[in-house]
Image 1 (cartoon, chains in turn orange, purple):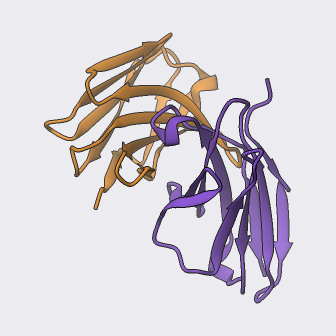
Image 2: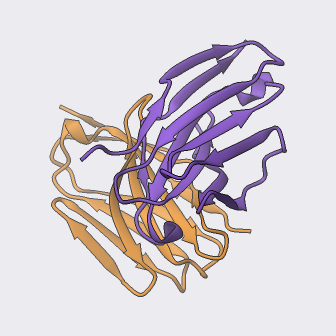
Length: 112
Length: 113
C-alpha cells in the first residue's frame, strides 16, 4: 500500500527566500509524481508532473525533483512571494490502481 | 476552454439522507475520478470511471456509488449520510485512464448535520 508523507506540515518564510518542500513515498513503483497547490476552500491546481523516467521538471520559479530509488521528491520554490502562500500537496500515481495517493500537504505562509 | 466543473459548490444535508454530486470533465477528457478531502487531510481516492464503468475503487463503502454518462460527465451518489461524510468532494478528469495529468474541479463542500 502506497503511503505519502510530506515534511514539514507547515512553514513560514519571509518574502524573497528560497525554500524546499519534501515528499516521500513508500512504493517506488509509481508511474508519475505530481505536485499541486491548494488555496483555502478551493480545488487543486496542478503545478508540476514528473514521469517516473524523469529526474526533474521546472516551471518558472518552481523546480521539482524525483528520486524513485530513495522514494523522495522535492519542490523548490525560488524567490518566494506572498502570493505563493497556500497548501502544497504531492501525490504519487500508481498505474495499476489508477489512482493518486496524496500526502497531507505542507501549509506555506510567505510573509512581507 | 472550460475546465472541470462541479455542482453544487456547497450542500448541507442531514444524517441518513442521500446526496448526488455532479461533475463535467475538461473538454477532451474521458476519465473521471472522485476524491474525498476531509479538513486538514490530503484527498482520498473514491473511484474512477472510464467508458461508463467503474474501473478502480478506493477503500470506501458501498454507500458511495457513481455513474458516468456517454458525454463523460459523472455523478457521485452517497446514501445514508453520516456525520463523517462531511468533506470537500473533488472531481478530477484526464484522458488515457489517468496516466495524463489530472485536472481538478473546485469541489463540492458537503456538510452533514
